[in-house]
Amino acid sequence: MSVTQTPQSASFLDKYFKISDRGSTVGTEVRGGLATFFTMAYIVVLNPIIIGTVKDADGQFLGDGSAPNIPLVAVATAFVAGLLTILMGLVANVPFALAAGLGLNAFVTYGIATQMSWEDAMGLVVLEGLIILLLVLTGFRTAVFHAIPGSLKTAISVGIGLFIALIGFVDAGFVRKTAAPAPPIELGIGGALTSWPILVFVVGLLTTALLVARKMRGAILIGIVATTIFAIIVELFADAGPSLVNGQPNPQGWGLNVPALPSLGDIVDVPSLGLLGQFSLFGAFSKISVVLAILLVFTLLITDFFDTMGTIVGVGKQADLIQQDGTLPKTREILLVDSVAAAAGGAGSVSSNTTYIESAAGVGEGARTGLASVVTGILFLLTMFLAPLVAVVPYEAAAPALVVVGFLMMTSIREIDFTDYEIAIPAFLTIVLMPFTYSIANGIGAGFIAYVLIKAVKGKSREIHPLLWVVTALFVIYFALGPLKILFNIG
Image (cartoon, rainbow, N blue to C red; front, side, top):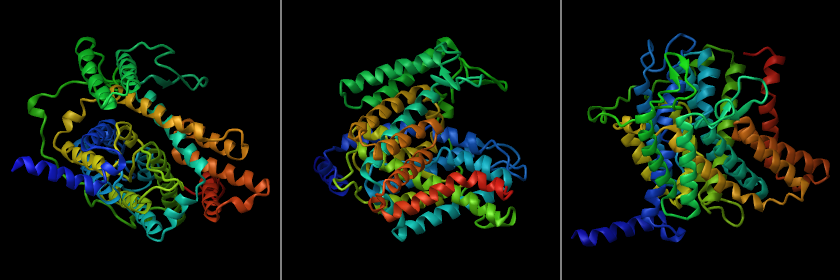
């Protein structure tokens, strides 16, 4: 009986997710889902640190209010990410995972919650998600996606590759800010690689790069697991400790968490979903001016809108899902789920959820279908019960995967014609500004504005898609928000 069930089960998965049609296998999809999860599992630890340790305008912390409740925020972060990632796999059939957006969560924390209560701030996040959902249902968001020239889509992919490589280097402490004004960043500590965690990262990067160069199956996942084991061994002997000791920085310590096996009694815990539904949809409008509230929602919207667009272009291209006409299959479904995720993040009090560029780690493993997303989503849900195990993987063990995936994504730069300045200059700005400003949206905005401006000045306005004019105008407003606030004394 069991012998006949396995092929039937495999056949069902193959048909539903079109696994064979995309040149993949069930095993490859599972490996890809695992790789994506381990590459982005840090968000379960990092998001609570960002949004769970800062007081709102009323002096309250997210959760209990009187004190930070990291476990409560971690559980909600994993829960929302798990559900939405599974939904993405089932509805859109792409290997894209979702979770609380970095950058977005920082803006919600420091740019919004400091002016109102956490409930009001999360209400604005829900409102932003509903607006994006409306844009998808009306076809506007999908139409904008299709209006982007092919070369700019390639530039977006390359820029994201550089961006996630930089994230990997920074997370591992391989690249750091300097105390002096110039240079703004440097290698390691004081220009030297003088800590055990950095050594772990370097060994992990070389190991992962070697495995990828040999085209070994499961190279990225093997690299993460092997580097984690190495990190645990190193910490046992080196005792480097955390990067913050008694409130004082420890440059020699581990970036996010100290790698160590949890005790058996601490592996499983019963999760609490007490944060769900703790939002006030229009409460912010009674705390701040209507104009400021609209500007905050607009900032969230424009960042979320184009961060996602850049991500699905980049990861979709890496997964070889982009069709000859430059479109992505089921674009509407992808954007629909992503829009629901934005609202769901606010409803779950964990900030706007968005499609993650770390999905490229699973794609690097060969994932091509939504089965990988289902695997990643299930692992996120299990993380609610096994949070201590997630904390075993330090930044320094996951970061090598980001750097290697960044390289893989950057290889498509050969498709850009740099002899044609009309596209080369916008592409260049798109590519460099993503890592240099630590923002996907900034890179896309600069590229769009440069593209439209150059075409218009050269008398080629007819080559510009009408929607690109609209989007470019929105980006001009986006970049002008700061000066406008000063001009009208807002905020």
